[in-house]
Length: 197
Image (cartoon, rainbow, N blue to C red; front, side, top):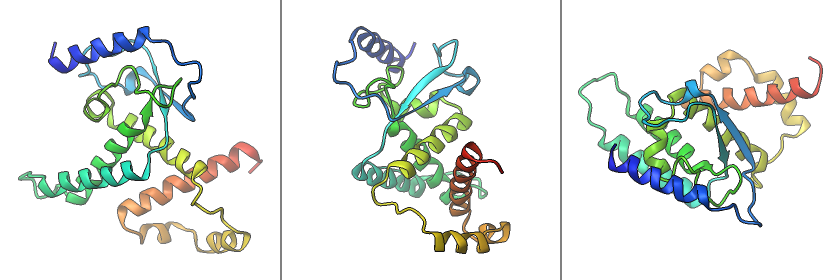
């Protein structure tokens, strides 16, 4: 067992014996990951599913995530010319955002008991599919709770309906197209869940 796993086991054990505080605030959103979404290389991975709390990330943390992802992309050294630095930047940004958003489902102020060192553990313990699923939950939480994101007006909604098609989305840079498609998927899910289409 590596030093990281020994430290993780010790911290997990310590956290397990601490009762959640009486005034603890539960995470505003949770995501349940099935066992198949946990990396097979994770030594001592749980036998079943796990529940992750999701919290909002501060502006300072977001700035730190961008700087660290940019540093990784700039210093990325791979002989494969197909590797795109923008893709490295985007992937690292998602991983870090997920790592810093994950918390104890019962207490938003505490690390998840399985991930006391989330920046190191999340990329090693979760599959890329799981990381993307958690990131989608993080984005949904940000859209739902952001005090600076305005709601769309009826006039803008009509403009969106007139201009929205596959060609419009494909004309955007890849990462912006992916983000727009994710947000539009959230909108469609909300409509489907609350009305008859």
